[in-house]
Length: 276
Image (cartoon, rainbow, N blue to C red; front, top):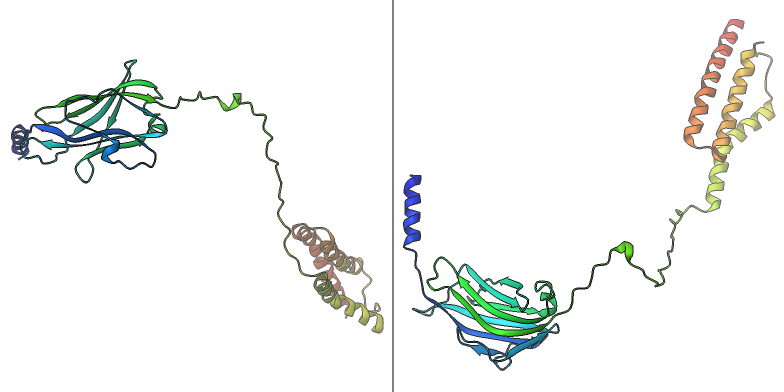
């Protein structure tokens, strides 16, 4: 099956329509930036003719070239595979621009010379402008020099490495903006919360002061002193947490104090149970 398809493709290619073509409605000119492409501003040219004199343009203008490619037989528009504008500088350097068919079937090159300067390698001076048309279905390829141009393009500024640039301009002032502190509640609220937290301790101290502390039933053991010292240490650690240290440091110290207080409290309870 594949050999048959290949043979049919070769036959189709061999008998593909090959047409004589011509260029019609060819117009060229230099226009101002916002100038309309009217016929009075452009030169109309027949194929293989050449514009008289030299057409001059500068970086403030647009180069405008418009044309159609048609079959000679029925004047229908065609779009060959290869359509180029060639600009040959007096030094022999070439600039080749590929053109694509528009939706209307014609071809148009309308570009500011300031923008196109890079494609022209920033060359300034005399150019020979040519139109080149070809393709597998074109019987008579076209290579037509249609005008002599004098272009004044902006020069290519030399590239200076950043490390070699010297600037005496005043540098902008560097303003550091620190993060704004988060909004906190009024001091009255924080003070009230502190008082509420201290109320249970104050209540305990007040009750102890009123009814007194009964040490008569306390066993004669050093664990009693250690237990109450552990409780006092936990209260002091709690106060220190509010004043200076963070939660992680508090938990580290609390693990030691809590373990000692737990063991001491267990021993005190054992001693009380034994005495009873």
